[in-house]
Length: 190
Image (spheres, helix red, strand yellow):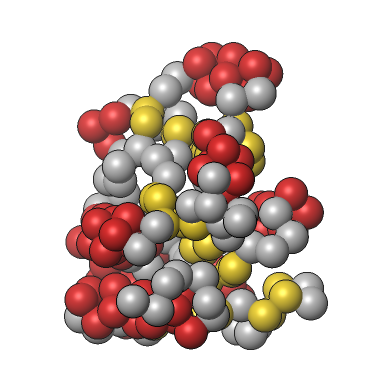
């Protein structure tokens, strides 16, 4: 039996990396693997459990067919290793830290994927972005504006998107993610 791809999306600062790290072991115990992305950013500045590579290395990997999915956003390149196809075929569910801008391509390749949109209240998001310190005030306000556009729809195209609020306690968000996956028959109901 094939596994299912869980495509996690959310605006920068919504806490995707924190959620993924906190949910990694509970997901693995329920037959769901969490993917390490390949990113053209130095390993020291990743902020997530990812593989940092140069642009040249990324392009070499892309040309070799090492990625199941790849995209560019905010001046960086992102790749999801091709190994996910083997994991899915072997019956593992796979959670990826995806991109809303790349959602349509991911859906073409994986038509049964389950889209999950991580949302966060605007004041919480502003505080997280300020604390992170990667952008100046104008860039943060631009991100907040994009967040409003990003989270206004309940669907993308004709696909229902499952929303998950991460404005509060991370442990609650992890529990809500696991519940969402069980309710939608992605994870075993054990």
